[in-house]
Image: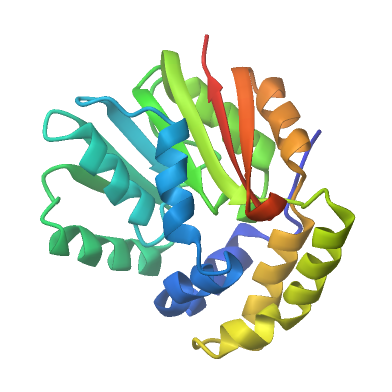
Length: 237
């Protein structure tokens, strides 16, 4: 199943430059205020051993990247990768505040064409980024490629509720989302775009099938907020 974003990389990059300063607050809105809890649950599903070599794709403002570094420890190494300069600037500020500069490297690059040899990492993660890339299948293939055999991939992303009642409520909330998000700062049309990518992204079962198509084994997922989000995990054989 090929999932592509009809907006160009240039358009998406410009959008994230505009919303960078409000991105964390926006994620709180879109996750109904539970994104921090989602990340805690994420790391119960995605094992990160001390000393692990980790790559966080579409790292944004760096919250997942920092959490990776805290788990990999001083003997580990973490790369936070994003294509947007403004997001990386905010991530760098957070990393300095946490005094993790020696443990985290920030790299500006394209998640669809990773600048790393095959088998470079023990853990690859992506949080709230897969739905916004031009070609999600290509990102999954690249994540698989740069993992070592036995390495783990984890994805935290918006999803589609299955329960009909929950689905109705979720759609109603998303009609309000651009207005609510705008209260945290930013333009209505930018948040309207982010609403559409979250609402239109594939279901948990479809994403699991995409991961299997990219080569991952032992693929499983856990739904969050009654299906509004999901954690997917896979292993490279």
